[in-house]
Length: 327
Ligand code: PGA
Image (tube, rainbow, N blue to C red; front, side):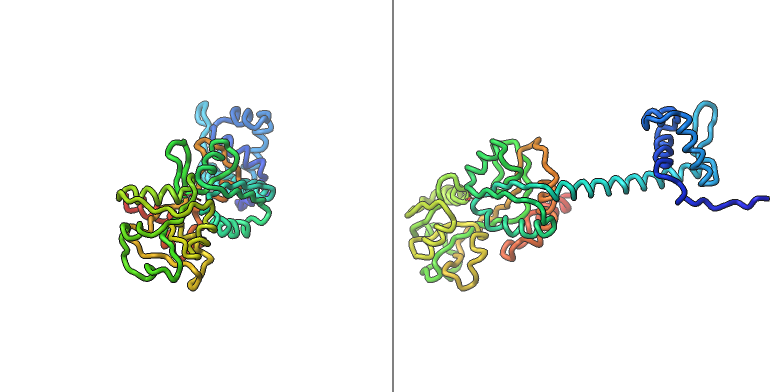
């Protein structure tokens, strides 16, 4: 009597597996042949060869219907795994191809320009061939660009309420009160908002998200600020504050390169820091490019790595923590 031989699946071809998978899915030779644009005899031949390799029948016919044998069921599960795996591989390769030649156009607010290069630096290490175009302007102008669909993605401190957008928070954005290091209020504890309001303020220009947020807090407490000067950039504001012209509210991120002994200090004021988030935003319905999606995923997954120490827990992780505790 002939001894049973072990199946050697290395002799099976991908084409045979594809035909088998289609028949098993449809439980029909005819529909599999149609799907694969093959003739019925070709399909039957492929399955006969595969069954010979396995050394057992893969289908059985009961009445008019075909069924998977036990061996067939196992092979079907294996074929799904093989094709899922190949599909993932294909997607990864497509991503790589897209990323290699990809371009990422970002528009960010002037305050976000302090953290964006940090994120881009880490991102470009992973994807060195991505071209980056970075537009830095204030919140109002970033929103105008969003309406005109001029960029792939926008980073700002407050998602617009009047636009239909998708907003992904990824990092905290504390707004603080800054003063010259030798300012009389430096080092004082829990300074009241009323006391702060006696100082001359250096303000960002109208259209700035920082300005809007700071004014909202003081308005809420019915406090009017003494605005000494209005300047169109965070750097100009910092210079004016360092020169002793007044104090200012800025994102803590704007001080990232100042160091411990620089000319500026953060005042301990009640109600501060105003903790906001940084958001990566795009218009709802926008088809994201492969590169843009990769950058969004990167911001979500790598927030911990790019978050400066002063921010504490990155926004993305605050969000996850909330989701978990809600269950
Ligand atoms: P801006 O940025 O003050 O430079 O507009 C802050 C923000 O995005 O809210």
